[in-house]
Length: 328
Image (cartoon, rainbow, N blue to C red; front, side):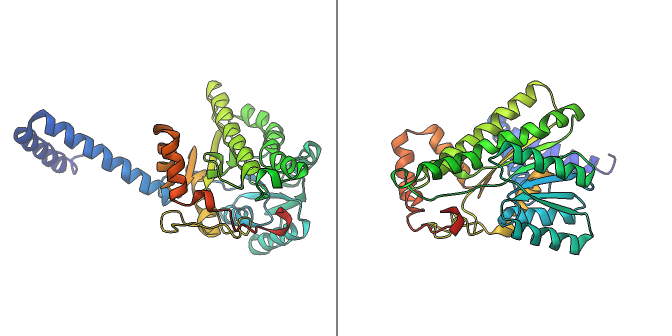
């Protein structure tokens, strides 16, 4: 404290001179500027993963849809941090490849993989039970990452396609969370992560079923968060709302202004999500500029928001969508 005293004295002198020169109005302006700079610094530190992080060493992390894309990438990153990984997917070949790669790099029994159709409650029960038995530890962090996209406009989609999207992207979260939440609340420890989408906050042409499912996922996370807050539980929640990620899931999607709305790389997105979980962030929107779109939607007339979405080409982004073969 003694070492800081000269700097504190100097700061007091500067504020005194500023006050004498500009009066109370200037002091308020200086305070507002200072608070703004502190907030900006916090945001920069947060988005770069420079905040204090919790340890996940020996924690059991359960990831749905972990055989490809950001699920696979997150599994590898968390495993390198010392976590015990359970990965579930319907693609058993890709699933086994990820598990083998992690165990080869970090030692046997670091990762466990099992088939699971997250839209089937019994399949979820079985997969979670097997994972807990394998690692001999209850689940500490649940990451609901599994997702599908049809890329079809409403009248071109099928009943089966719409049902599949809603069941996997939204309803499945109920089945996974119900299996782990009671134990987490009893231990007053745990973390529920929802991989949603910016399409869970704004509508996009050609993504009616997907947006409906992701709006549901965002609502699921927010409602769960308030349930936990009411009980003063220390179980954490994190909702991730990214723009398009180049995992193949949205192949063909375009951005009219890629400097403002870039297609996110799988490496960046997965690292940002891992950092968000480790930093106990509540809601993550990326890229950060999309926060302004949400503000405009909330504060301005609908016509202004609609015109802005058309101006920036959001409405056209899915016009050349291809996606993965299994997503069609």
